[in-house]
Every structure is written in structure tokens, then in C-alpha cells.
Length: 287
Image 1 (cartoon, one colour):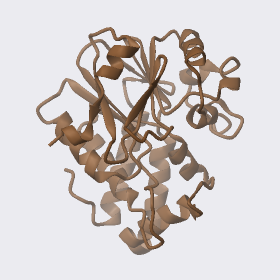
Image 2 (cartoon, rainbow, N blue to C red; image 1 turned 90 degrees about the vertical axis):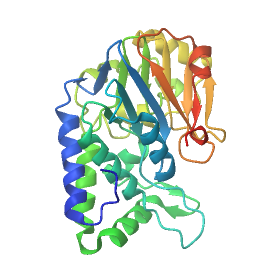
Image 3 (spheres, one colour; image 1 turned 135 degrees about the horizontal axis):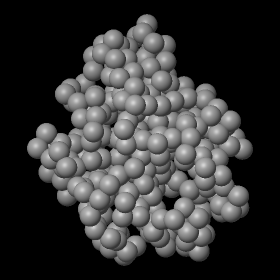
Image 4 (cartoon, helix red, strand yellow; image 1 turned 60 degrees about the vertical axis):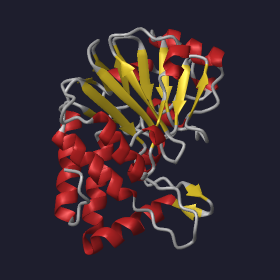
């Protein structure tokens, strides 16, 4: 199930099927996934191609023997590169995650992120003087050769199907980030009731603002929680050197490095911000 994909046909099939499953998800309404009050939900932060942590996540979740456990992933693409000759092979993680979704459609879920959205829109992101879009395309070409464009089209189908957020019955709202502080008051919360339009996901749109925002204070987080009628937020987006940080009622996870973290949540349990922080696990703790 999780073996590396070696041909473009298999990669495209996994990505297209995962996209269809996301669009037809019975847990989804508009751009929001809803979870009830039973079972465990495992939350992650940005993964950026980190296969080692992904494999540890799969071992922890053990979905073959844990049907009551679900997992949410986001920001899988655009591996962090350091040397000039490094190659972004984050397509491997994306395809393997899609395969995981196909194998466990009722347990594996994904959310939209700024890097996935930039990949879909062709919007350049530069890191260390490098184009992440060019680096990603190069990795896809090295993996799949002349079928590169076919695989990139399947990647776009997958990204276009991504929901924006998840909400649990015990009051936790999960999304890639929150809008910038100046946008919180006027943010169009009806976004979550509909499938995002191109305008929603373009600069100036609420979906775009949701996945790109940063720098919220505890008071601003509390204000937005009241607007949405939730107790807590779990997000990614902001890099976390030690795996996580808490900003009032918001927990930020980073899952893309050796100090990366994830968060198992008991859906039948009420959490305070302190309890949520105490439940954080490090990937290094998983054998």
C-alpha cells in the first residue's frame, strides 16, 4: 500500500481517486469536514515531503487495526532544500498519502494549504533564492520523465479538491492557518459553507487569506474562536523549530523535521488549551 510509486499511471490514478473521494466525502459540507464525538483524530502540521515522519505517522495510526482512528494531513509538497544539487521529491509523499487515502477513505483526510494552493495557481514562492514550483516540477520530471505534465495535472486535480478546514464536536477547528489579524473581523465565515470558488482562492479572497495568514495574538485568536463558535484551533503554516507552539487557544504544529510533532485528540473529551498542548507527541517517540 505504501510502496513508492514507480510509474506515472499509478501515480495519476492514486491522485485522481483521492480527489474524487475528497469531493464525495460524506463528512464534508461545503469546504468543511465534520467529525463527531467518537474515536481519535490525529492532527499534523506542515510535512513538506518528509517521508520519514509520514512513515512514523502511518505506524502510529495503524489504520489496519484501528478503524476508530482518523488522521488529517496538510502541506505535503515543496520539500525544504539546502544544497544546490538537492532535489525536491515531495511528489513521493503526495502520491503515498493519496494511496493511503484510497486504502482508508473513511480515515485519512487532507486540508488546503498555502503551498498546495500556490502549486495549483502557479504562484511563485521563493525559498533560499530557489523557485519551489520549478524545484517541484524538476522532481516530478526526474521521477516520471515524459509523463511529467500528466502527473502535474493529476496533482492539480488533487489540490483543487482539498477542503479548507475541519471541525470536531468537542470544539476544535483545524485549518492550515488563520487570516492575518487585520482580516479577522471582516472575514467571510460563510466560506466554509460552500465549495471555494476561484475568487475565494485568489489574492483578496477569504480562502487565500485563511491559508496565508500569520502573526495572530492570543486575544485575536480568542476573537476569531468566538466568531466561529469554537474553543480551540490547531494549525500549521508558521515554522516551529521544536515542533509546536501555543498562542492562547491556538496550537501550531510543525511536522517536517526531526523535532516535528503531531497531536492525537480524543474526540469524546473536552480540552483546555493546556490539555491540548500536553497531548502533543514528537515523531521521535515513534519507533
